[in-house]
Amino acid sequence: MPTDAQDGAFLALWHAVNWCRDLLNCFSSDAALASKVLTRLENAVEFEAILYDAIANCPTSVWLPPGSDMSTNQLKKPSFKPPQLNNKKAKAAVAPIGPRLHVIRASFTRVHPQVIGILPTSKDSIDPPSLLFLVDQFLSMLRTSLVKSTTITPATQLKAPRSKLVHSGVYAPGFAVFDEHLKFHLLNVANNVRWVLHAPQVPRHSTLYALVTKYFECIVVIAKAQSLFEQQKQQLMQLVALQQLILPALTAMSDALVHMQSTLTCLDITLAGRVLTALVALERLKIRWNDLHVKALLFSAPRDPAPPVAALALSYLRRDWAHDEPSTDPSKVKSADLATFLDAYFEFSPHPLDSVQDVACCGVVASVLKHSSGFLHNVLRAMPFFESHFVGHSKRILGILKDVQGGTRRLQMLCAHGKSIQDASAAAHVPKLKKLLERLIYETGKLAREHNLMDAFSTGILKQRNLDGSAAPPEAASSDESVSTEQDEED
Image (cartoon, rainbow, N blue to C red):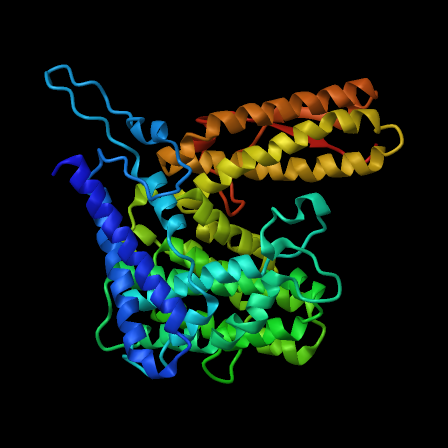
């Protein structure tokens, strides 16, 4: 198809999407036209999907909606491809799709908050793609309305987004959107999501996955907006909003989310991270409340020594995602997802080190070794500060170094464990970590020499141990020579 014909088709689809969105904004408040408005919503979603699919199938096109700010030179920049020596005919440059789709989405007519009110109040009244569209718009409105106001100068006040303007003593315009529109649709959003999850005919995996992900993101946005609700003196409104968005019955919010994630058929490691993030946000919110009834509403009493969020994080760490979920590629398991599980477990578990040997799988060990480099970097940056203040604070500094030395022993054990399990991703972080440990030993020895404390400092061969503390076999201990630091409590 010629380029002019492609651009004409794109422009027609773009106008069709905006036309449907304008109809939604104009007639969504008329209850008599509810069925027709839902039909136009389906048309808007269908036209938008056709436009995205058409642009993806025309990678050489550089079409943009009227009034877009993206320069044409950015679109004509080809993506990198290895040179092909045997190909005599040069291929056309491929324009990047991602930035174009972002610009196109931003150019659509904005949906008014009152459009969320067209969500039906009965089952099987809306198709999953249309529900996904409304939940996505609802999430976007939550993010822009629940932004804490900050003081800005009058010169920049006119150019700032309305959600960031400050009005002393009254609601900021952004919060007014939540107070006047969004808070009335929280229960309806939650009910429609549950109806889709329990429907006899499950929607496509991609639609269900995106719908559940955005639902948990809505919970996180509201739970993390504690400072904004305190600024507006509406702390109880936040609790009521979470109650409507989460609770299907009179039970604790944490139990409702844990039960929901156990019934999800599309749960993978990324979605599990979203679930755990929502539970962590609720747990931190519970800590800030003093009312015992409110705490019980947010989280039920733990049935074992570990809180529900810690128990769920530990179960995620013990789970073999690549084996349990065939759709999860082991090479695509990001360390950030495992770090989310580890952070939640170590933050809320009363005895986190008791189960460290149970979660020492390949991915967890690699994630810990990767993030331990940042910990050692921070300690090394603090060494000049320790040297300059050692005379007046020798006991405190020696206590810090002694605690750090205990952590370095565990890092040495993890390095040996990463090699013993023959995991390439874990072994790749070992050389860098070993160098940082050697630098720490050198800097600590330098500190001891400068202040005549060599009697309290010694180096030697580190005895290799397993993760549970037992001595490693002789062949394992002889294969990896390490150095440790010994520091006395006396200064």
